Amino acid sequence: MALRHAVLAALLDGEYSGYQLAKAFDIGVGNFWHALPQQLYAELTKLEKEGLVAGRQVVQESRPNKRMFHVTDAGLAELEAFAAAPSKPSVIRDDLLVKVQAVDRVGTAPVLEQLQERAAAAEAKIELLGKLLHQLRGDADEEEFLRHGERIGPYLTCLRGLAFEQDHRDWCLRIAAVLRDRGLEEHPCQIVR
Amino acid sequence: MALRHAVLAALLDGEYSGYQLAKAFDIGVGNFWHALPQQLYAELTKLEKEGLVAGRQVVQESRPNKRMFHVTDAGLAELEAFAAAPSKPSVIRDDLLVKVQAVDRVGTAPVLEQLQERAAAAEAKIELLGKLLHQLRGDADEEEFLRHGERIGPYLTCLRGLAFEQDHRDWCLRIAAVLRDRGLEEHPCQIVR
DNA sequence: CTCGGATACTCAAGGATATGACTAATCATG
DNA sequence: CATGATTAGTCATATCCTTGAGTATCCGAG
View 1 (cartoon, each protein chain N blue to C red):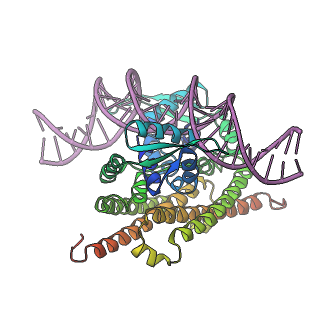
View 2 (cartoon, rainbow over the protein chains, first blue to last red):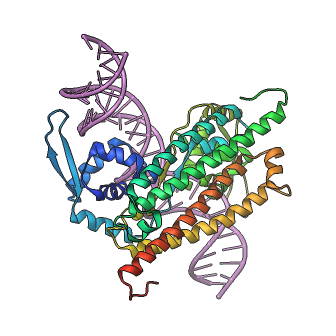
View 3 (cartoon, protein in one colour):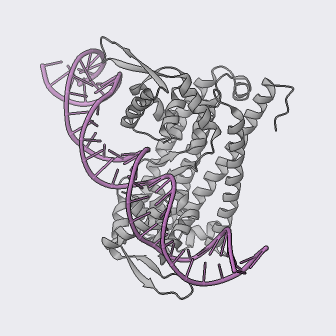
């Protein structure tokens, strides 16, 4: 019962179609709330029924028609109440960490490979978030923007996403290095790629 | 279909009862996989049916009886296969970040309060993980342990948990400071606690 | 001597999520 | 001129996860 609030928060900055929302989720809200497009469409339908968002049909010629949604006053009130209520503990689930937990008892080679893939993916995300942050703050520098900017919420959450990805990348690379070193000692004559 | 692997990984270091597993999850595996005790009991039952773990009844006198579980060879093989398969993208869900995303449009006071609570909670976890890490590596220093320790998986994942909590704490405190400053400027004569 | 907390679990109900398949038009690329 | 990518969604199913309650014993604090 909380995807609704993530959707409302993501929809605060204007009108989005379900499709656009799904995209925006990937780069922005996706840093702290994961959801598939199907969920978003379903949630938008529910929110509309409850009057927390309102949609209008947009007829297009060279594209399929779409419905653009925005948050209503009732939706804003719902968000307000949500913000004041106590937060649930955050949820994390990561396959790769499970594998690392077990790494002494299973083959290290595939884990090593996945650590490097993850590091690369994190690197890509870091660049993307860097650009997004720059775009959000415009010409101002960060301190200036955070003091006087009108809409800093998305910027703040992107900062968290950025720090997370940097941390994750560093950890992946360090662990990969540790595992490689140990591999070399166990089989000192073997070249590990 | 992946809690099973988290349970298998958590169970690698010896025998646990469901109750003990639930406790261990909170501090160790809980850093990257969140699960309630009910889920763990249910999962252990399923895993036993499939022969991936084996349990034995332990009769106690001044405590309720319990069942101690350990991973079987089949369980280890399952983990092995899991480690070699591609990882699913990690899942994060955090209420507080949703609130920060919306912070320009809702009351900041409760969000500020929750940021400080979170920072304190993270601080407590940081201390706990610091102790746990020290306990895991024994007398050796970290580099030494990572090079030659026999079981480093749990240590590596705790390192990730520690970095995450430190990062999270720092972010919470910084964001809280930013929001306080902005609050002061909007109402310069008001004392914000 | 009672009350809360720890040990050790079990069960049911309902909401949330993941998975995969499906429709349908347009546009760019080779 | 076919192929795949992009836009814009919908539907069904199965599993997962959360919530909340319930059972029973023992220990220590007040």
